Structures are given as C-alpha cells and as structure tokens.
Image (cartoon, rainbow, N blue to C red; front, side):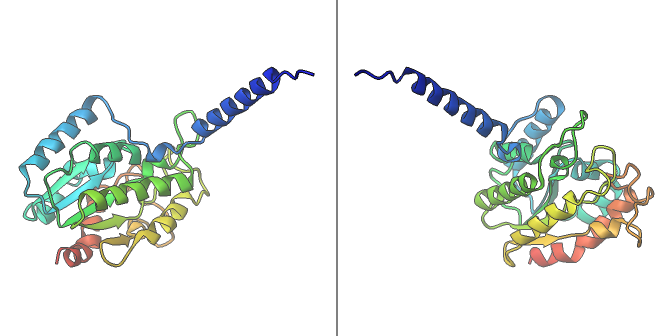
Length: 245
C-alpha cells in the first residue's frame, strides 16, 4: 500500500510559514538598528565628523530631550559644559533602534569619552499617531539595554551615566494611569553595576511635590524648558564629576 505525504507536507509548510510570520510580527523593533533619512541622517554625518576630530571627554547621547540642549538649554549648556570638552549627539525623535544604528556606523569611532550621559527610550514608549503601542515595557528595556551593551563594547574605558526615562504626559506618551515609564526605569535600574554603569533617576525633580507637571518646567509635558535644563544640570553635576575621576 502506498501512502501520500503530499497533504501532510503542505500542512507542514503552512505551519512553518505561520510560525515565521508570527516570529516576524513579534520581533522587538527596539533592538534592530535602523537608519533615518533627511535631517537626522545629516546630523549623524556631522557627529561622525566631530568624533573623527577626537577630544570628547563627555558625550551626551539621546533623542530630542538631549537634542534640545542646543536650543532651550543652550545657555545652561554653555555655562556647565562648554569647558568640559562635551559633545551633544542627540537627535530628535530617535528611538533605541536609531541610536544603535548610529553607534554601529561611526559616531563613537576614534573617541574615548570619560563619561557618556545616556538618555534614550521615551520614544519607544507610548503610542503612534494611529494609537497603536510603540513597544512593550519589556521591549523598551531590552532596547536601552542593547544600547548600553553596545557602548560598553565600543567604549570599554568609558563610564555611562544612564538616566531614567523622564516623566511625560503629552498625548503621544503612555496613556493616563499607565506605569510603563516607571516600569521601564525599574528594569533599567538593574543595569547599574557599581563600576562602569551608574543609573540615576532625576525624573521626580521635574515634577511638583504632588507629582503633577509644571508647564514652567515642561511646557509641552515632555521637553524641559530652560529652567528644566537647569534642574537637569544641577541634578547630574556631582554624579558626573564622580564618574569623571
């Protein structure tokens, strides 16, 4: 008696295809390096050129909150970091996957900063314009963790001041009542190794005593004002000095 394996084999192929599709759908976008176009691409090239010149002792790395040291926080930056051989490699709207691509494509080649001040991950939380979630809490933690690991690999002598994701209450952030940012920060705190990586949560300093937001400090409920950048600079002054020793 002959048996046909055709149907079972076709079923197997269908099952494999379904598994592959499910795997792709569930892949963590926060850990897959992705380049950006337009202005961010040009900023990346500028950062690569700046890195090739060397002489960077303190590197600020992140998204728009770091980027805005150039605008809202410029006076505070000039006062606190102009004489520290500091560089600002922040790009607005960046997520962990974008920072990973930048790190893998020349932004830290040729430099050995004493300290990297890292603030990234807020754009991996919250929702897209269509209301769909960007990344889960676990995915966001994994994304920031991979950025930290990449920095440790590429800059083995550098210390990392890993800042907790700042609080936010803008429409694109996690919905009211969500603990996503708090939970992400709880996961990031575990990266503090007491030697090369120091985790620091300065988020409460931007809030009122009752935990509400002040538009004087965060006008759009996401990015600090000049006063907010003053709070940031004051909060990391001693930790940064300690790590630079």
